[in-house]
Image 1 (cartoon, rainbow, N blue to C red):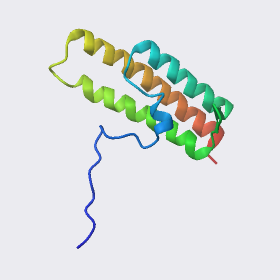
Image 2: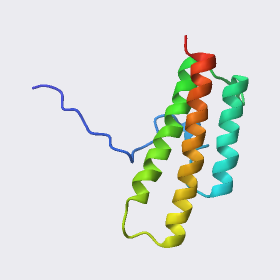
Image 3: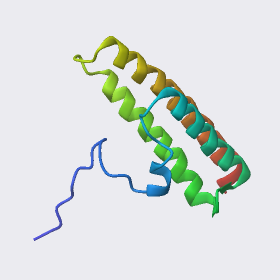
Length: 112
């Protein structure tokens, strides 16, 4: 018998718990603060006591992109209240722009 691959999908447990502390759907101000912390950490090369190298920088950029994709999928739901839809739309814009910035920093500073 061969291995059975499992489809992960968009909604799953976080692969990196140290990033999961910063990427949440709690609120718009929290998202702005946390994405700016991650972007500044990429620019500095340190997140608290963690040094950020090539692999961690790529993990941060991918996590931001994945959260933007999750929010985009949520926006496609038909049963959302207008307030919730507006919140998800604003969060999507925040995480999408942060992921673009993170990938730009990754390409400039970390990718060989």
